[in-house]
Length: 147
Image (cartoon, rainbow, N blue to C red; front, top):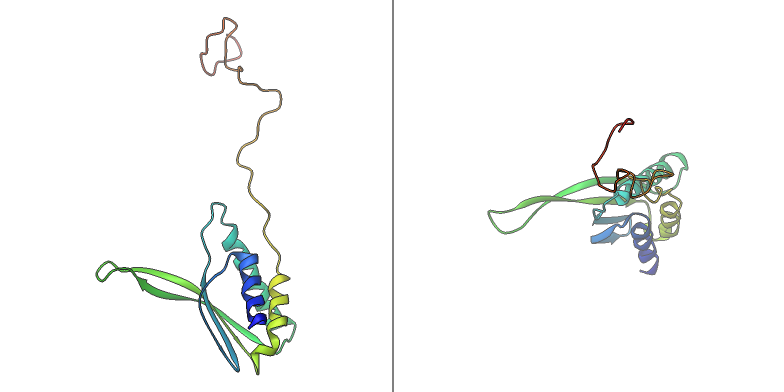
């Protein structure tokens, strides 16, 4: 179970993946989770990079496991007021899947991450708080060059 926990921790650390349910069979690992919203959308961008890394590993590196990544939709809420929500589903298949948890974890941890944030404002060099004041000290807002 600890190696499965390593897979879950790697998903959470890389993209904020929050596990909703899981099942482990001899030949299949099935995970359903959600990616929490954040202001900069960094979690979902990182999730897409993890997804890409898992898909590439299954295709290019010839690993013994394959991955199927999709969304599963649910109804949530009181009867008559249901809301459609979805969870991200990973199905990893191979013979004796538990033996490959280490490889899966390494693939997830090897995924690139997005940059920290986006600059939305920047102070102008040489400006100060009194740039809109006239010489007599009265604030008049923006004005032309000839005032």
